[in-house]
Length: 239
Length: 174
View (cartoon, rainbow over the protein chains, first blue to last red):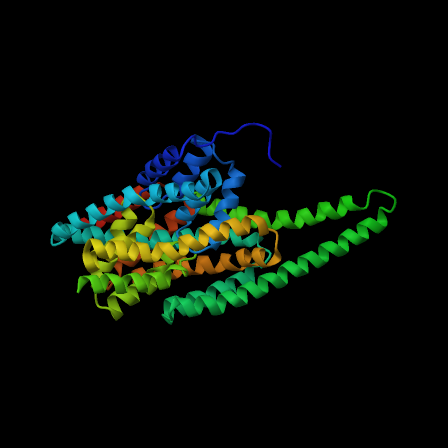
């Protein structure tokens, strides 16, 4: 799959650290869109496909998505030290900036204008989180899990968290196990259908190379799964 | 005294770290419960303000955890919450992604990604809902809904939204 063409890569761990510091400092209200632009288009360390694949894994594992992405990319080029350099680039300087802003804010906090502005920003922030969620939801349409099952699973978790205010750990474990089991069931069903189709095809094309169609359809199922992940990732990274 | 607070914060946040699936924002309801209702380290307004600053400021949104720690127990608090929240997750991600790279075609791995997708979205919506509903009044709900609609339907730079929210608030409309 890898092309013989030499692609750009970070020359040193320092370049990795500086790149992630600079891009993190550009990210007001979220870094994802900038990560994608810098890494894929400016630096070209990753193709768009590689980036989407990375994002899918980053989203599924605990930790902030952009931090996970930075670690995965650092690890890919320079191993453990690369992962540490990329992650600290993402967090170190931005943390100092944010904490300075926060301590400044506490001195001015008494001003009614400042309090009002913060209330306004908080309202917008809440809306941005919801808007991103709704935007990502459109990516579930092509999912193997199906729209109604996705809505049911997501709706259950939402009601438990937002209305009933139950602790997240238990909710996630309970709904998550059901979701995982159901997704496995869906994957098995699709694999079975594809196997049957491949067998039929092979029987009808008797005499030709038997492994061609089977391999082709297996990769089609895989592409279908990947496509869902990729479109979800695209929706997530487009802001 | 403040050393004890920092240590206990580290423990609490380390416990939450592995639940941070889909980004730090999904922890907001749980952290709010912890810092405001349970430990009484922060007021409701201070909590919401800290989240807003971190979201508005440059850098990953997860830095809101550092700001909350800073407000609760100073610089040591910031270190404690941030290290607590990051260490377990980052370790798992570092080891996990190496393992996943090898095992990415396993059905169990793909089912995990597939099943998580709707839940991550539900957690994001619950986060926004909780942030809005804990504030008294009703006009800010309109602002939240407008912001949600704009993020959903347009590619408007988020800085414009934050600026508009700040301006509306400073003028006393919210």
